[in-house]
Image (cartoon, rainbow, N blue to C red; front, side, top):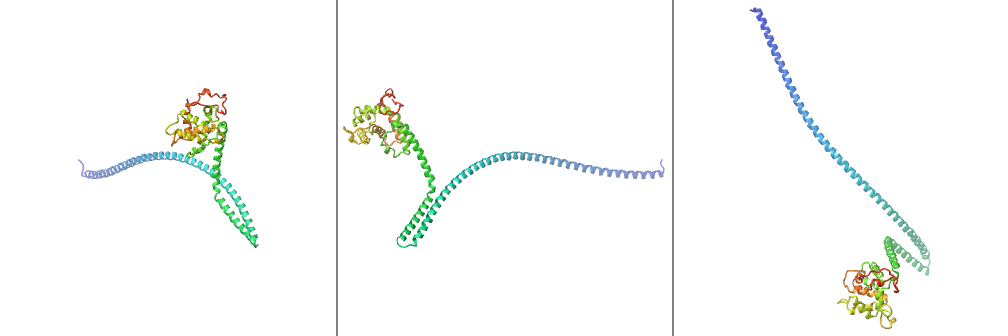
Length: 352
């Protein structure tokens, strides 16, 4: 058994041990609180980490979108640069053209200035003469008045010339076009030298928008059918010096153009209309010479189609294809070596 002293010691020891246990429990509670706090911090850190990862993914997505948009902007920039380069080239070309036009305008202005200087010199000279004669009396005063009127007239002429100067370019262009047409017309006449007959048919071109072109096409058809027309003409004149009215009516009847529109009376009127020479040269009544016979064929082709929208050359071509074929000789009779007066065309196509 313990002694009382020993029991007291044990009590103190127990008390200290209980105190230490309670202190240990307090420290353990503090440690547990710290662990819980650390767990909370870890959970918060994990949440922050997840938010950062989500933010990084969003940033990556935005970066991808930005890269795509940047690539699109780069392509647009390349296209815009190409467009701007093209516009710059066009502007440079336009600038060169404007420079040329400016040089032309400056040249024209220099010419006008030169004329203006000449006019001003003339005006000054006339004014000096006017002042000289103005101080004199009698006839010299009348001369001064005449000079004054001349100065006014010259000034009016100068104003008129200055006002119409801009029309010179248009007149030059019109003259150039007319010269081009006349050159073409002359070359065509040289080509058809042997078949360019005198024809009084300009009244048929009154409603034509381009009568010169129509006439050239018409003469082209005449040129290529010249040999056949001459054969038929020789057949119609027989022993006469030309085609009389009976032979002319028979020719039209054989061509099968007589109808309710083309009557024998109308054909007879055309016969007299085509006679251009002096009828007194024909001793046995009016006769058609060869060029008048060709003109009669043209007028008959127009007469058979009143109100038609076809041009004169097209009507004559239709006549040659559909009516003249009934009287045209066979192609074998059109030898280029045949002794037919005035046959200059070596090419002929038959419509039979």
